[in-house]
Image (cartoon, rainbow, N blue to C red; front, side, top):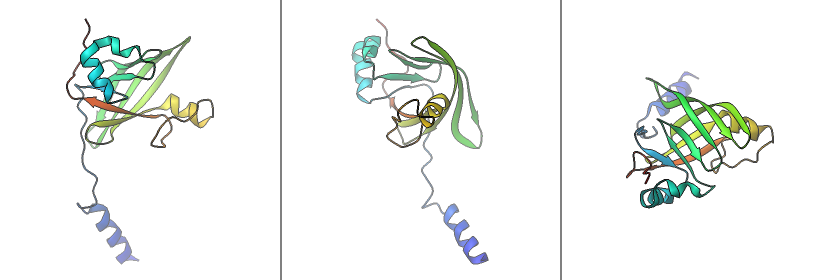
Length: 152
């Protein structure tokens, strides 16, 4: 039994099996589709007229055509690569508090999980939309060429 435990601990600590340590650049703009980065660079805020596009910044929160979440506090922890954000969100005829778990997904993508959306999906109120199977999760892609949304 001890040998199995030692072997299991060795596998966990093995550098060849460890996940890469991706980082999150808090100064960048993140969008729900990579093509939106080029559209924002070309058209500025006018690119946000598409209802399927959401934009996230750590300084401001999440914005889309019909929905917004203003971040009030973004916290980190020294032993975790994720972020915790508290927000007040507004949609069509509604306002509600929300919390978000934000974590690196790969070298240019972050996973943003809304506790409100997760609850609504698990309860059957909303249809699951996440391609990764995590209720309330949306993938946001980093715009390397933008640190703010250009406004004409």
